[in-house]
Length: 416
Image (cartoon, rainbow, N blue to C red; front, side, top):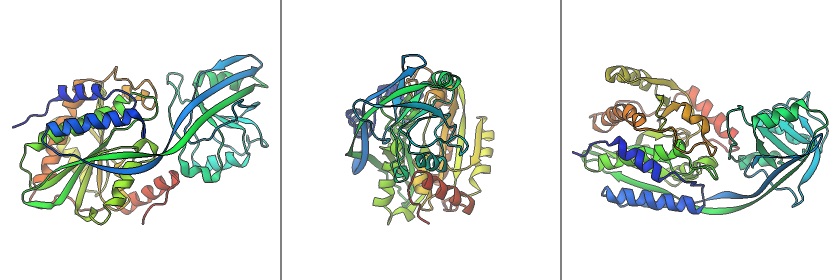
């Protein structure tokens, strides 16, 4: 029988260690690698095409003009719009996260302590800023390569840059800072693809357990923790199950465009909405590989799952932190239509570099997968081999409310 090989997972994650932004050549290269791996495991992958809005940052520049002169390292925020080629020039005003007390009249470049929530963003847009500077959350963090949710733009937009904490602090401490902000980016509709294979059940083929992970990254980032390691883990499980006789169907899905607002998983749910009643549970693998760390499970599903996983972790002697909540990952696209989800991830100091060029694989290791392996295998065996599916197919009302709020935050409607 095929055995789970943690070294193979790590090697595959390292092969995927390059930028894989939705709609880019890197994403296509990653997809080819994934298809090749699945074929070598005996599957014939299905590629499900969908279209999503994507972008490319051509120029992102910030130059302080007063009371000193210097270029400031920055990263453009996708979908936040562009300046003229010459940029926009203005005094910089600090507004925290959009506090009413601090918001000035229109026309300033505004400095934010962090990316605001939607309500704060709406307030900021009412002051019609010339541009926005968003500080990183820590002096030790690199620049985030992220995007604004396109749905937020109905409330207004302004060209936005991320800057380092130390640079934001220097601007905040000075008075009368004047700067020139330049951001040039292009947007277009790109064709992306989800990759799907399955091992059909011999006894209950119409009952399906989904195992999924996203293979894309934010722009310009190797994305080893988020989510080359999760992708490699899903591929290793697919290899393992390709040689097993299972009672229930187990379906493996590698999603694209998760980093643009769960676009791949939303496209899958929409395309297959008439067949989702057969999906009993989704196992989502996102943020993995940190060698020094611990294991997490976030349950967006029936109340019985949390105590079961807690008992299972004790039985196996593997630490697992379990809570019931909603996370910003592909499983939530299923949870919003009533399919329960368990999100497995790895907490680690290595995760501090996610969404930045620091997510480069320096601190990943085999132990991350050795630690997670018994939990995943035992849980998947329960789901696929039990005579009756062991958990109800439900999402509790309290979690449904959180799901609705999450999709509102993305600027998307949530199905009731």
